Structures are given as C-alpha cells and as structure tokens.
Length: 397
Image 1 (cartoon, helix red, strand yellow):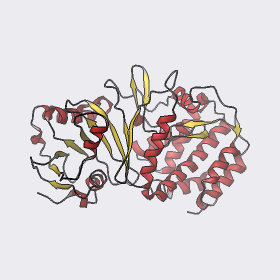
Image 2 (cartoon, rainbow, N blue to C red):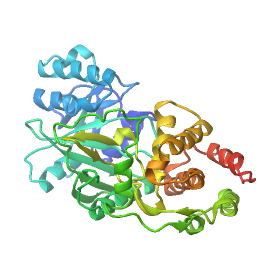
Image 3 (cartoon, rainbow, N blue to C red):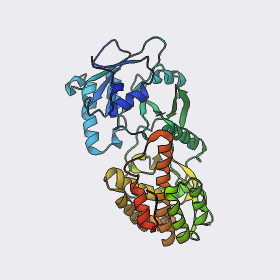
Image 4 (cartoon, rainbow, N blue to C red):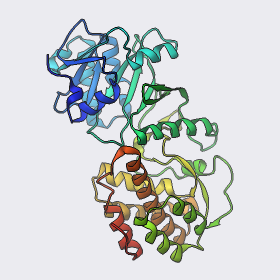
C-alpha cells in the first residue's frame, strides 16, 4: 500500500481532501478487496484525471459511458474503450492504480448519506479530477447499483466555492419555467451541509443529450430569453446606472477604469437584465430540439444585456484556445461586433458592454480571491493591464 493521497499537492491530492474530508477515513493507494469503496485512478497516479468506482462492472462501465456523446471526439473514444474493458471485467489491462477507502465505525461517505436522502438503496460516485485550483468545486456523478445516473453532487469546500454552491441553489429556485426560447434547466434535488462543506445535488441530465452543434456560434435568442426571463425587452437605462453597482463592489485597482468608462459612456442607453454568468459551450447541450443549460452559480440580475455573449467569447478564447487576456478581450470585441446587433446592441453599447464586462470579470476574480480561492493567474494582474490600455486610465496594478 502507498501513503494516503490526501497528503499530495497535485490534482488527486486536493480532490481527495475535498471529498474524503473526514480524518477518520483511511485512504491508501493499493487494491484492498475489503475496502468500503475502491476506485481506479485513471490514467495513473501522477496524471490522475478520474476516479472510477469499482463497485461492479455495470457501475464502472456506466461511470465512463454515461453522457459520452457530450465529450470531444478524442475523449469520447478513450472513454468508450475504457467502458468496454470495464464491461468485460478487463479493466486491469489499463494498469491503473486502485484507491482503497476504508470507512470505520462512526464515519460515513457523502454518497452513502445522499442515498438515504434520495431514497436509493445505494449510490456510487464517479469523481473527476482537475489540477489544483481553489476556484474549482469537486463534482460527483452519482449512480445507483443498476448504473443509472441519479444526479450530480457539487461540493463547496472553501469560502469562495461554498458561496458559489449557495448562489446556484438560489438561482435554480428562482428561474422561470422553460418555454419559448428559454433553456431547459436541471432541477435542484437536495441542498445540505456536510461537515463544513456546502453540497447541492442536481438532477441528472436526460439520457439522450448531445453536444451542441457549432459551439462557437452564440445562441443569441436563448441569451435574450435568459436576460429578459422570457418576457419583453426592458426600457434602456443610462450606462451610469450599472456603473454605480460596479462601484459599490469596486476596489482601488479598478476605480480609475470605472471613472474612465463613466466619462466615456455614462449616458449610453443599455438594457439591463439577467445573465447566466458562465455561458460557455461546455455548460450547454441539446435535447429534443431544446437547449439544456447548467452551472448557474455565477448568475445574477441587473447587468447589461450582452454580458453572456462577452463571457462566451472571452472564456472560449481563454480556456479552449489558451490565449492571453489581451487577445481574449479582442475576442469579446469581435463577438459583440458580429452578434451584438441580434441582441439589440448599438455600436456604442457594444463598446460599453465589452469594457464593463472586463471590469466585472476582474471584480469576480477579486471576490473569489477574498473568499479564500486565491488569485487566478490567468486574469490577475493581466486584466488590469488590459483595462488600462483600453480605457487610457492609470490603474493600481
């Protein structure tokens, strides 16, 4: 057996600390058939990306095959191969190490507790692993003994991520029902505190979901429906009204940017409404001709229409194309120029939305840092330099 992976500083280290937080649990790398739970660590310990439950062939295969149509082609092919090995009882051919979890009397695994709340005899959890990042929340995909998906459990483990889980709970409770161009939204099944964790259990996706076609093309009709909560357009307001809300959250580092934007665009009319807050292709799917949209923890109201469009452009450039912040800001300008008219944005409003969004994004980054998540090095201080260049205003960097 190898030492407890919770002592590691890499991806498997932070995920196991967040998920197996009870110090009474004993975790070891090594296959112990007597353990309460066993996981294949894929692809290996040093490059771990997935903890695959080994409760049964059915559950193991379901953990990698469920919703595989949502994956990029290369990931889909890899998961399909692993799923076939799992069904055949030949997963040992992957040479993946095994994580064994021992649960002494008085301790309990989170998904065992959730099984009682969801009225299921037993649950198994498949656990994704990402590199260490205090902004990330572990998400458990829950399966029953028959391999049927039963939900997703999101775990807030520090102040910032606990706040994000609470925000998603509140958002799901307040969203209007789907209809017209409004997207389908997964329901909240349970919210609970688990030790010092904030946990939200979200219903599973329909089995027939598929990746959206042409993911780089914004769904402007759906964006407008979300912004307007399925209703009519709101009367335009002077941009200064929104800048007042930014200033209430502000910090000295961006006060100059807000001042410059107010002087330039304070009288520009803009429509204010809701936004999803993390509108990116990987938070969307299609099902029976409808758009399914999840991960609402960054949603809010009273923001300029067009923020979701700006966010999709920035985050796609940042996360999928690995572009620096300045080039991501250029992508925002290009998206607003191409698709802003479909959202009713005139040229001056498009310029305002772009710069106001960049300030909003930096403020979000700062607030997560203050909540214990630490600074995102991709965005700070790079966004401050971008704002200084775009607005011609000296900023405190």
